[in-house]
Amino acid sequence: MVGTIGYVLIDNFTLMDAIYQTGITFTTVGFGEQAPLSDAGRIFTITLIISGFAVFSLAIGTMVSEINKGELLAILKERSMLYTIARLKNHFVICHHNEYTIEVSKQLLKSHIPFVVIDPSDEIEALAKKYKYPYYIKAEPHTELAMLKAHLSSAKGLIALSHSIADNIALIASVRLFEQEHSIPVPYNIITSAENNSDLEKLKKLGANTVVTPTKLTAQRVTAMAAHPDMENLLEEFMYRSDTPLDMEEIEVPKYSWVVLKKLKETHIRQMANVSVVGIRKKDGKFSPMPKGDVLVTSESKLLLIGTQKGITLTKNLIKQRVKPEELKYV
Image 1 (cartoon, rainbow, N blue to C red):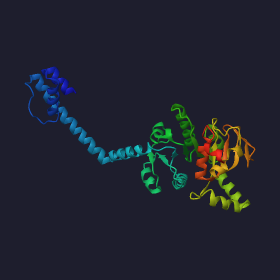
Image 2 (cartoon, one colour):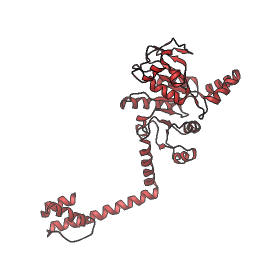
Image 3 (tube, one colour):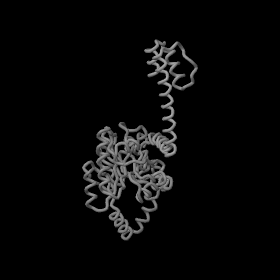
Image 4 (cartoon, rainbow, N blue to C red):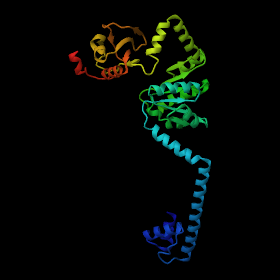
């Protein structure tokens, strides 16, 4: 651009002649002058040649330096990873690599749930290969840049697994702020861990949906195994395994759903989807186990379902409809 403007102003070149003269001069090809040059034009040409040589030399030197440091390859790898992550939807973002992350990732992989691991460690690439993380990002998890790279805007939730409560607090605050700034319609499901009960309460007040305490969880499992060993074996067989056909899930009834203010038996969920409603949680949080058929389904209540994943998915689709499905006329 500078060369073209220079030739036009100094020696009154036409625009096309100025562009061509700049091209052959800047690249030091030297095909000759397109038109007679003045002394000022020749000085300008010499300056342009030296500048072109300097720019090319600097560019090559920079490229060789980056290749030797491996940063160029790292940038290309990260860019390829980011393009892949940008296509994810309803995935989880796992923050910080540790023993919890390893076990959680194994279960998510078995359940075919996509996830992205964020960790600031320089060894994250090697760790990702070792533990088979499909997607990973080297960054501080609480930064907005890391959240953008992990495509958090399309994620289902975030799992904060740092051993430091300060890191988990920073993550929760950052994610909730990210929700507000980017106008996320559905709040993220934030799952985190705490070492004791006091930390558990703090994290819940700050906005965590679920806080897992390893000590309490271990005690509950041990107590359950001691009091009801057969039931615990049943749960291990049907609920905790990823390859079991049986699943349990709590789904919310939208305000617009056709099942609102219908009796449970009138929805015919069991006949249509072959699932059982084993509990209803009202909007105020009150839980009713094993509801009878005469119980009314209210707006924004949650149904606890047990059945196959296919049946639960079908139930979700039925409940989300505004008008009573045609199929129910024949049930």
